[in-house]
Length: 263
Image (cartoon, helix red, strand yellow):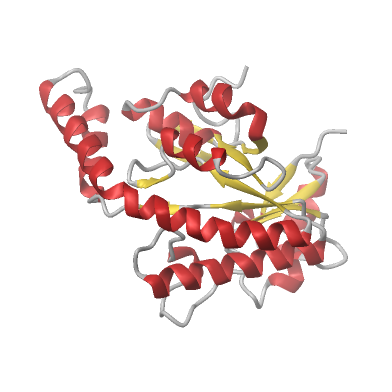
């Protein structure tokens, strides 16, 4: 039987957690994915007797304030600031422990980001939306973005790998798999080549790939890696998929309400 999870991020669109659980069952979902909308205070509601079993957890979960004064979800496993990186690792370790306690098979990870100015991508997207992707301004900006990202990325990739080494040891000990998710923004880690590099350094029984349809589609529409290349290249490491639809350059839409060719 296929396992179809509903992310708890959709619970924010329902009047209560109880209503969310009820509708999830009525729609035919078999499991839940706990996400960053789950706070420590709300966690018992998502694990109550009416809840579906948890198949995966999106780290960091539960989410909430940290000693650094920011939510756990705003911390990067690729941070060059060691205090931030250590706190991001600690929260991901807590997520792995939670996954082990509730019987979840997989923890989905965001790796973090580089120091590239995100305004460059915002301008690139504006050019795409204006139909100017074939023009010289787009070509020049894309070239400068690519060069800048390559310049900034290396120390962040080293930091990610250091973080993953610790997380992989805990995951192996807990019998939980880790999955690295493809990201929606150009300054985020990993790029296509970085995903290939990182996965090559960890065994598939510990670290796999998690495909977000919306993220891959938007990256392709902006002019970077073609969508299907992610699935063709990393399909053997695939542990799960986030089924998000896309309209224009906006994602996180329910499947069937956007422009994705699901067939």
